[in-house]
Image 1 (cartoon, rainbow, N blue to C red):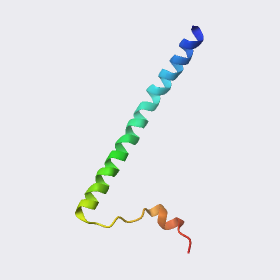
Image 2 (image 1 turned 60 degrees about the vertical axis):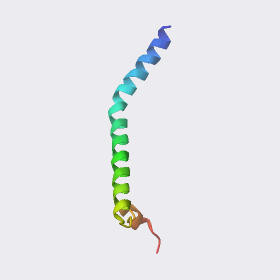
Image 3 (image 1 turned 90 degrees about the vertical axis):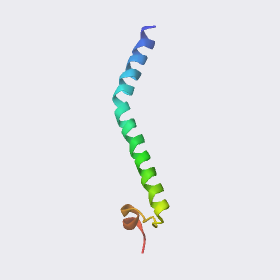
Image 4 (image 1 turned 180 degrees about the horizontal axis):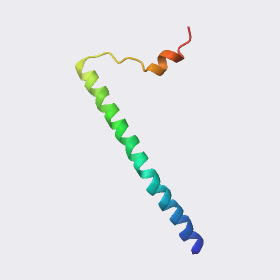
Length: 58
């Protein structure tokens, strides 16, 4: 029983520390999706990311 409580305590602390980061990632993805939808509604052509410009092979 003591071992199970130790595992649950470690899991709880991990989730407590990881929660803000996971929430931020979800928020960023939501904002990116909204921006993409706004660009498509306006008719803009989506440009490739800057990373894609540097990784292309000539």
